[in-house]
Length: 215
Length: 351
Ligand SMILES: [Zn+2]
Image (cartoon, rainbow over all chains, first blue to last red; front, side):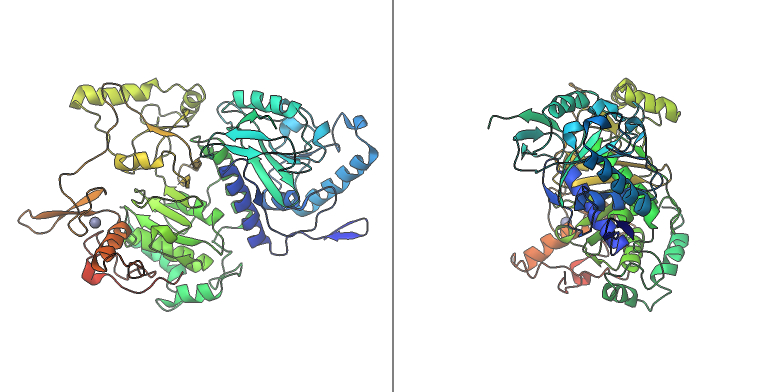
């Protein structure tokens, strides 16, 4: 158990089944990009970590996967307020304690990246897009947003989507969508993204094409 | 098939020796929800660190359709050739609420299918079924079920050789480079040599496909009859190669095209006959030699599909009566032959 402030943050109450359930939620989300999936494993998470972010980290992150945490090691931290700096510290404690994961100083060396203030996140090109003969060696970004259905609507298509899929994340900067189009052009290289709000997630694997729609 | 006795023995240690025959499954079901089974293994046999590693590989495989993700394969209590890649994929995804179906060449009753089903019943306690429509996970060797799959189902293929370019280029470094550069001309040349030699493309199994217009992929040794089922399938398709340590995937609703030529379009196998048991003209048929005098008949390779059709015919389409047994028959047999209407158990599924 981890003490952050006055609060105790346990890991999964049942590591085997909670990990399996969290993984299946991520698998379902990745198989159906843009579809909102409830990760559904109740877990305490140190702010600003959302419950789904904590569950996904516990399910997928370990000593083999360097994690980059926004602000803790970001050169642009001066742009972010002190509270965020503190948040990054409790977050990295949580990951080190529960997942034994090494922290990546350079986002380009991270298997996972945890982003809690997307307005200030580095461009997608700062992360690893993998190699052309090993495109799987790329960063998976866990981006916490303010909502998944309350922001500007985008229309998604690609593998996993029968016709089209709508998604309306809020709190993601406009530049993200331009960077996402460039990310798609790198295929088969590229980063993969999980958008997270509370216990809900929606996946944007690198194959997903995004069109901005009029509201 | 190689060394079935050895495999049966190894699996038997976990499935049979620890409990009286037939009791292992029941005990496990009662223990559903426990992380450690009666046999003392972690849920689904694999340790949690291995599962995490395989799960990460599966997620990257889904994100890069048709691309072979390397993973650190673990020793399994079955020899290679018995589907260790598929078993590891199933073990990494399966949870207590899943319902598992295992088929080998379309049949639930072969030694291979029965052993794998028992392995998971013993190490997870999950419910098993022979009905394609009831299963949430279907592990398969060499077939895609005839019954269309639905969204939410996962089809796990056992893959002996994952690399489609292997016979043309032995070097892994070189085949990776060819995939990276989308350099697939050699494969077309190989297929065209077939046409020059035989007048048609002679490849009938493990027929190469392009996934989402990009990666060239081996679908595992399914008949090319099954290739069109992969295209835009609502189910998630996962492929595990144990010996070569590769996982790849076709997400739901993803384009899968069989390679062909304008003047020689891709065609699936057809039969003049229909199934001796159910009369199907649309299913993949196995030819069975019935006597020494050269007698033969054709029967569905997919035993659940054939059984459902026969049950529907016998009971005038009564859906309840069409339910098949959940328990696997004790006698592993030749697909179709052991599966005659008289031998078919008529219990009601309890899922
Ligand atoms: Zn039939």
